[in-house]
Image 1 (cartoon, helix red, strand yellow):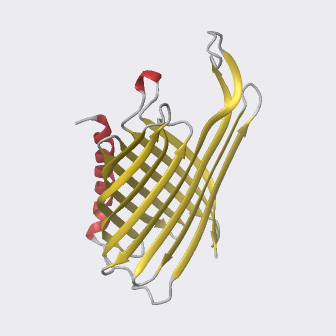
Image 2 (tube, rainbow, N blue to C red):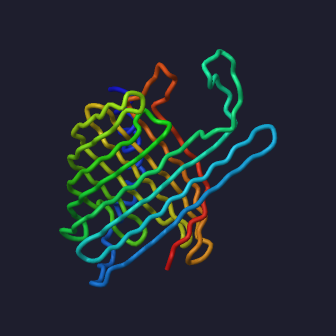
Length: 265
């Protein structure tokens, strides 16, 4: 099995095993009413260093959701921008120099609409668009649809899986070549309330096609300080199977963050 396929499967297996004890005692959550439940959450993290080395890092995320007894809609906006002292041969003259320059610049927009068959089953449509200045692809856009199922859905624990076919369009950074292919999209989403004011979450998204397999795993632990404000520590791993390895580009990137989370009420 290739490395590009092994990573998503290992993450999925680990998450499924961790959720197994909770599945034995799972029960359905209280039914929603006819009135929709709205939720808007914002995350913000910033770090800056000065002295021998300079660096700045800003990451932000905005999550909007609306759910009622018949459907659920989600819209996510996220961005990452960083600057740092980088030593390289920028001019191609064989002489290395240090410049304070942009080292990361990425943003993503993603949306999902789910039509419920009942509390445990649904049909979904999903779209995702990403731009990244430091990736093999200038942009990636995907659309998919399929079936979703809650294996666990109660007040403390939720385990959701989604799978379905889709379509991806991407442009290579170096050549401007447009690549289009059909994909299979899979999602494994797990959240568990550890205590009254803390929660563990993990979300694994895989979009696999002939040209590239993209996987993103977001793991986080949040602790609420009051009804609106929380502190969240998170680890994000992003994997692309199609990279320019000759140029030293790695297939997997990780991002560790500690963010303030505010829930608008």
